[in-house]
Length: 419
Length: 105
Image (cartoon, rainbow over all chains, first blue to last red; front, side, top):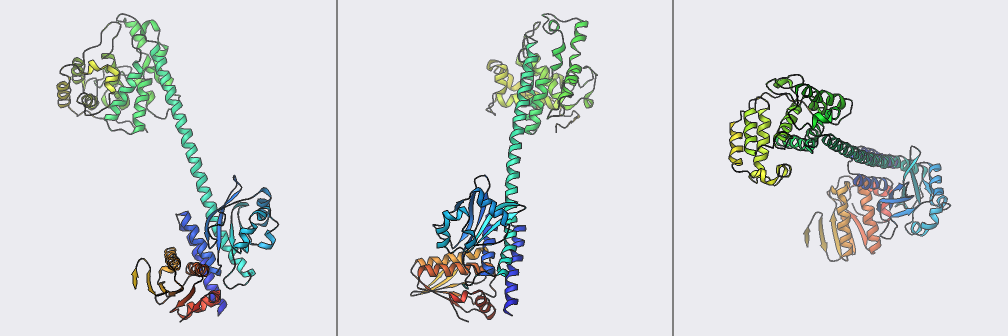
């Protein structure tokens, strides 16, 4: 009868421990409960569970009961201790046998004071993950072989719990490392893109900084559209690289201080297709970058180049870059033309909404400008790109408001995902 | 004097009764152990743990009670388990808890 009750009690604890290890999310709580179940199943007066750190060769107490405040919370092991624990496997070691272990020489007094009787190395898949220390039983009897079997079974659950936790920590560490590597790669990509943009701009002395500005205007439009950070970054990259095809165009044509002739114009107009060819083999984090280069001179009314695409046929990213590109062309000095005043530029944008530019993009762009002019936003993105005086031109606020009210938002959208 | 905190406690002179109820069998039962230690630190010489509302005691409960026994031993106080049902008494005897406490049915 007594044996039957003992079996029910210990197996109840074993079952509970198994479910605890399988279900508990909170590691510390799982360890506390596990120690209670182990001590309570055989009425062991005191004990503790320590996790082994292979790198520090140290046992760190995760949870203790009845060991007192002066019991060391970290126990240093040496190679020989670890070797012997591994050779022993997951089976209790009597203190008398453990006395030969080097670490026991250091902590002998602490173990004796707390009447530690058993040490259980937690060896899981040939790896030592921890040790359980157990004190005397409440009935004062030595541990029987039955007790040791029960302890073994429970220790295996506890060891698996620690091994799982270690694995999770390792996965988290690797995920962090991957994230850092990815961030580094992204940073390298961005730096390369910016360097490319500068290289493109170097070919054209009159439009120095053009690609960088188009990148920034594209970024502003994407932000005004409420795109995600990744998508905004993609729009900026598309802007930075939209003229990459110009690298192959004769410098004399690009820098011609006069209106170029038809032959030269045909040569220059090849740059979108060439840009596309250059960018296509590159693995960009943003899929539409080559399309922006190829189609940024297309117009909604089909009068653009190279393919005379119409509204819905034009990739959305190309529409954004087209607007940013045209705006920069209008607001910077060219060899044959001075920059146009802000009022004229806004009127031009409004007039060409639905013909050259997607209306909702003109709206987003004007809204961004208006927010800055009226002080609704503290950002000074336009001021930095255009200069303070340019942005403070007389009558610009009502003009922008008028443009926002006047542009029909009915253009059909050709949404191309940047994911 | 009746004090109502998380764990029901009744003190009369140097004797304090702590009511185990069903808290004992969960991790939250550690608060019973903390309350017992608090009473022992306050000078309690006889600590009674009352099991009138406790139907069964599982391994977690046993572990917590061992903690109480240990604390009482350190404090030099006497410990009594009262109103313990027959199954639980049998369990305490089998596990050797009765070597350290007086059990009253």
